[in-house]
Length: 161
Image (cartoon, rainbow, N blue to C red):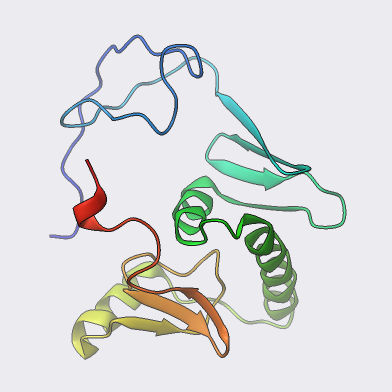
């Protein structure tokens, strides 16, 4: 029931940063395109270099380095508008915290379990976990004083084209 609709593979001539960039409108109905080689997307946020390839986004700064799923990066970045440097630091701190917890034996619940608990309890907010692994299907998420996102963060349904 919660699975997205099937996307068909289409041949769409799109060269990244030449005739198509990631913030452009996606063709109606969406599409999947299988490429022989993975794409590398590199950007600078101030002096910070961020690289995305093969579904992973990496902060290239030696003292704040991390790697997370690119879908998490893109989701969070839209919700931390104009606070990207703060987000980069928060992700680095959260990554370190998560590694320490996992070394001590902690395991995060799967998104399937969280989705089931959300439905049973009609939950709208997730409290706990880490910013980069919190599922985006909650209206808000955070842990203590650290707010990952709220319902009114980032673009809203009315603002989308």
